[in-house]
Structures are given as structure tokens and as C-alpha cells.
Length: 260
Image 1 (spheres, rainbow, N blue to C red):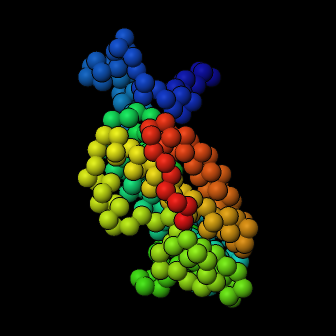
Image 2: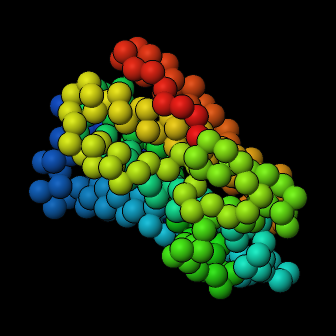
């Protein structure tokens, strides 16, 4: 019996092929000459790019498949910590994505461009995951307009939480703590240079501080283990980022805004 033909090289073993080619690499020429190895390299580039897009845009779809197949218990209802946390945290995250995108596009500071990109990509992926859960649970992916926020933290009026303006309440709030105002966002879009960097750090640091209370409560009180797990990750990542942003703000001559 003749030996089986050798299998083609498995590109998955080296997912970084072609991403960081130096000046001595002839990949560009290879892509044009029609050789088999050139076609293989081209497929790697296309597939790696597609995978990156799928990880971001398709995160919600992956969560939906996982939950629909692996969780036979009743989904959380509208009044649950799980649903309230997912809706409010998603809305909170989306504003952070907006602010981080402004800084990433307009800053000339490579350090701040890096942390802005990290915040933007992390919170966009988490927002997609939260939306996936809400779809599986047959719930809206954002709170209803005018319905208020954080009622899921009140424990029927026995638990006090931030009211978004420096005080506390046992009911709903109209503005979640740490959220920037429309005027602040417009100002962030207008300023440049050092003023842009300082304002971004001030607003994002306050934003992280405001979201921390919700994440901590979700980590302790959500009924689903995967919800508690994500909430815990949010607590840990935002605490670490807050420490970095506090240091960067002071290095650039700024001071933190009052905590929400």
C-alpha cells in the first residue's frame, strides 16, 4: 500500500503568521506570485482577520448558543439582579466605549491611546456578551426609556445604593453613577492635546468608579454563575484600570473629579 499523502500544514498552530512581518519578509511578493505557499499565507491573513471580527461582533451569538444548549433552568425574570445588571451595565459600558473611542482617535499620547483601546475593546466585547444573555432570556438589551436604573439593587427597598449625584437611595435612579453628561461628552469631542487627555482620564476614572458598585453587587447577588463571573472580572479590571488612570492623570497635571 502506498503511503498516504502528507497533510497540508495546519495554519492554526501558528495564528500570528503574517501579522508582524518585518522588512525582510517577502510575504507581499508571495501573495502576488500564485505559489501554493503564497495562497496559504493569504488564507491565514484572511482567516485571522475574520476571527478577530467574529470574536467581537459574534460574542453575543456564541453566548446564545452556549446558554440555549447547556442551561435548561428557567431564565432570570425582569425583576432579577441578572437582568437588571446586564441591562444597566451594558448601557454603562456603551458610554465608556464612546469616550474611549474619542480618545483613541484624537490623542497624540501613545500611552493613553493604548489604555483607551484596551477599555474600548474590552467593554465592547463585554457589552456584546451581556446582549447575548438578554436575548436568550427574551429581555430587551437595554433598560426601557424612562424606566430608571438600579432598582435591581434595592432588595425591595431595604438596600441603599448610589443615586448618581453623590447621595444614596433605595429606589431607582434616572442617571447611573459615573455617567458623563451630554455637555461633558461634547467638551471631550472639542478639546485637544493635553486638555483632551486630562478630561478623558477624569471622565473615565469617574465612570469606572460609578460602575464598580453595580459590578460588585452583581458579583455577589446574581443568580447565574456566569453572570457573577463576568461581574467579578469587571470589578477586577476596572479597579486595575482606575489605578493606572489615577497615576496617568497626576503625571499630566490633572486631579480626579469628585467620586460619584
